[in-house]
Length: 175
Image (cartoon, rainbow, N blue to C red; front, side, top):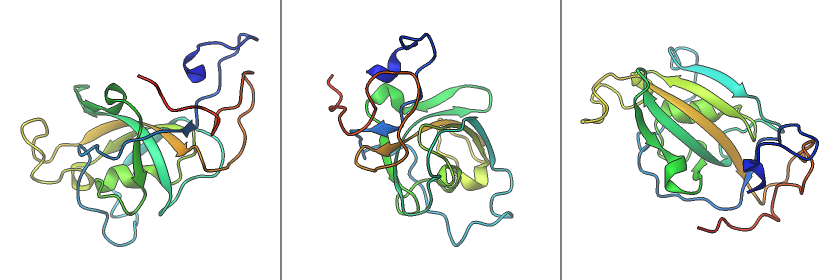
């Protein structure tokens, strides 16, 4: 895939890929109760979001369909789940998919092509019960999330790096 090349003809890094032409909806790892009510500062206490790569275009909001790859880890660095190992990105409808609250709230405001490191406090993750045996009760989680938009969504074109534009012309991933 073009985005996986390290350098363009000019020697500059290629822009991060912002579109995904395929997805899967069968990732049950994040299943949890949807966020209740409107998000407010007291609900999000402890949720820490760091933009590793800002991305481009309009920030996503509630009701939008996005595709993500993510790695979930414990705070000690132990990897619990990595969607990149399982194929195409996971499709999420912000506010409609039954996804743990902290993960979903961390997507709001993210821009296509962006990458975030998110620390989700246990209250916004798997709660008091955890998800034994891998996630003990009251365990905070660390996610690294890459955000893509579905290929049929039109947004700001990619710039720089040369090569063909990334978008609907990309064919499905062949394995």
